[in-house]
Image 1: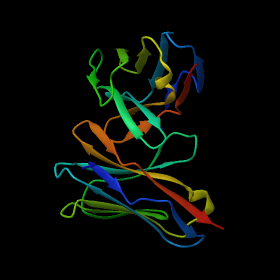
Image 2: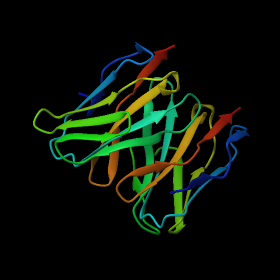
Image 3: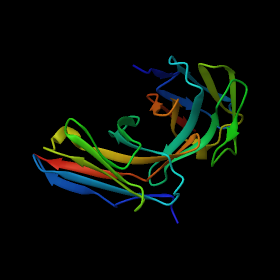
Length: 109
Length: 109
């Protein structure tokens, strides 16, 4: 069983819509949760971190964490073509991060 | 802003050559990491270090070694490069949030 699983893509949404990206993790001891955005040919860029249950909003991005369900999600409101990228979920246990395989998002103009 | 730099963006080497990839961070982070990223395989941890002269094996350490003589610098060494080490190599540093360098695309011929 994969430690961090993301919903399989690719995911396509029209411009202006809400994109919803999901991630589940297996280790209940996981402490911190992150979302990275990776454009093709580039390195991952941290866009959100969340440490406690509930929602955390930053501009058009909202991260949601439910530790009881071992579930973390990322919502992107008013999606733009520039949001087209692969989104990586990462979970921290001790010093290391475990990454999901990523969900490729395409925002259609 | 955290800055993680890597010595080369693109590198071409021949089979059997010794290859050095260098990474420098400017935020006094304790933890530094080396990953490789391949299509369909995601991010895989090669080695990490949580202090000067300390190193820990990640998921795929075979064929690699590392050196951390100073806190800001973490080097990845391919003792005898092989074609299956052709990949994108990513360095990262962290206290809690992990930040990536721009990556080195290594081709071994």
